[in-house]
Each structure stands twice: as C-alpha cells, then as structure tokens.
Length: 304
Length: 124
Image (cartoon, rainbow over all chains, first blue to last red; front, side, top):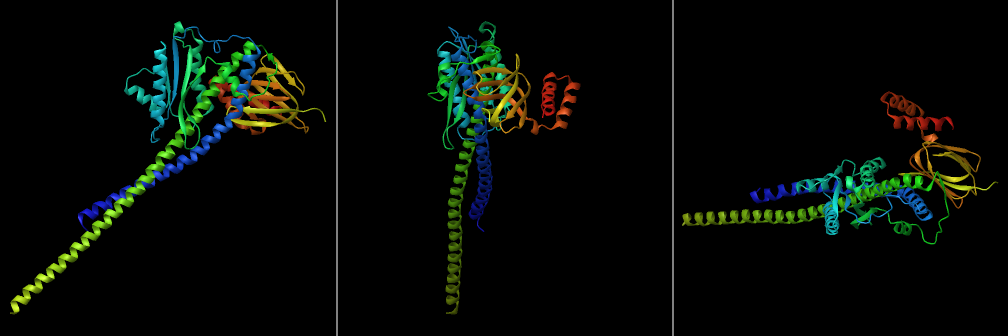
C-alpha cells in the first residue's frame, strides 16, 4: 500500500471514531432535552398558582414591600447570569454571556453599579479569565437543576435586595438566561425580577379573569413577606430549567452538525483514497507494461 | 351530595394531587383552618404540617406539606408547597431514621421535616 493511501485510510478511521462519539452525544442530548422539557412542564402549575397569588396580594391590597417598591434612585443592581457547566453546545454560553455584558453596559450607562452572580462553570471561567469581580457563583447542577438548587441561588440574592443599598445591598435584580422557545430556537434574554412590576405579573394571568377580594391569613403584609421570596425562587427555578433545556437542545444541534460534517469528511476522504488507490494501480500497471516492453526490446535486439 | 370544591395540591416540581373534595383542613401560621365549598376567598401562609383533604367519595387524603400557601377562590383551592408528599408515598422507616439522625445532628429543620412526615402518616 502506498504512503498516501495509508494516510487517507488512517484519517478515515479517526474521523469515523469521532463521528461515533458525536452521534452518541447527540442522542444523549436529545433524550435529555425531552426530560428537561418535561421538568419545565411539571413546574408550571406551581409557577402559575404562585403568580396568581402574588397578583392577588399585589393588586388586592395597598401593602408596601421592599420587593415591590422601586427605589427612587437605584444605585446598585444585581445581575444573575445562567450558563452551563460544560461546553460543546455551540453558541449557547457565549450568547448568554454576551446578553449579560450588554445588560451590564446598559445598567452602567444608567449610572448603576453592577454586582454579578453566576451559575455555571463556563460563565465563571469567562469572568475569571477577564479578572472581573463575581460576587457569588454556583455550579455543578446546571444539567439537571432541582428546586433546592434554585433556593440555594435565590437565598443570597433575596438577602442582598433586602439589605439597605448603603450597606452593600442592591436595588434591582436582573436575570439573564436562555429561553427555550423550541427545539430549534433558544434565545438569550434578560428580565428584571425585582422590584416586581405588578402590572407585568398581572399580564401573565389569563385575560378576562377577575381576581376576587381575598381574605388574608394572617395579614396581607405577612402573606406578601412569605410569598415574594417563593416567587423569586420559582422564577429562578423556571429560568434554570429553561436554561438546562436550551443547553441540551444547543448541544444536540451542535453535535448533529458535527456528525454531519464528519460524514461529509468521510465521503471526501474515501473519494481521495479511492483515487489514490486507482493511481497506484495505474502506476503499477504502466510500470509492468513498460518493464516488459523494455525487456522484450532487449531480448529482440540480442536475437539479431 | 354536598357541594364540592376542586383541590390542586402542587409542589414546586410536580403536581401532587388534584380532585374534588368536601373539606380541606390545613394549618396556617395563625392556626388550623378548615375550608368547605363556598368559603370566602382566602390566601394564607401554611405552617409545616399535615393537610387533610376529605374527598367527595368519602375517602381521606393526607399530605405532609413543608411550608407554602393556601389560596381559595371560586370554589377552587390551591395548596402550594415547596415540598409536598402524600402520606402513602412516605416511607415510615426512612422518616423515622431521618428523625433519629436529625435529632443526633441537632438539625432543627430536618427534624421538623421528618416529624411532619411521621405526623402525616399517623393521620392516615
């Protein structure tokens, strides 16, 4: 076998092995997307009921609460960025990071200080490499977040917003995550969680539904006190789940195109290998023919 | 048949139980409260504790609820909890072991959780 042919054969073998791996990763991601989507769906009843309750208290009473009142001059904001622990997901992490950076720039232009909180090793690595300050970060659960993880993330954030701004607290809480629109579309979005805009929350409840006048047990303030942190947790939980589903969908797509590319590469390489083999055979034949012709000429000459 | 109310018991990550009931008893921060059909709209904060649902077919469903809210309007009752378990789902031995462990570790919240589970089983 010729040297060139051997090189082609070796490359085909290696690309075939890579293709097998990417194909497997694609299939794993595909099954995880379905699981993650199911978790998003399972968490929806809680989120909708909670939203209804928050709207009910917010509109049904004149209670003032630090989590719903806008500071007159907001001076510090917290930004929570959700990324994944692992890469190989196309532009998933970079678009989330880009969205966070745009938001940070916008907030800084408004004259606010920005505290960054990060979920996921990828986002943390990005910020650490650029030596930017990260207040707190969490990782290790981005593939399959549980409610306990959401609580863990929400805890310090709620604490920060309840603290006075002068003592290092924040006035606003923004969250940047990747919304799972469909299997093919995931978009990085930012939204303001706190202070709550009750009108926005109200829009999420079905139209035409008149909220009844509730009796609060023990009191509207106490209910709101207990309700709002849960609401934030549930929103963060929902964002974590969507982000996980998006990450798996992005991985699936990235691995699918990797598999397709590997297939194309194998086709091209086999064509080249075939051509090389053919050339080798042609050369051998012409060598033999040439050799025998020379031999025939020589013997013919000696006979004379 | 008496009037019925629709009950949804939802935990943060799943819907635990839903169905028709004639009476729901839950513990709010200001005391036990019983909700029957036609109750006035209510929104309350729940304590950790067992919730008893008397279903319309005469059965009783008991669930352990760890913090959360009760909201009632239009004959629809929602029980929202971060963690909620039906008493049938609770593994008694495991809860007892957890209680022992929590007591020895002096972990108050774990002890309370295990205690609520056991109380829910006792009411079953």
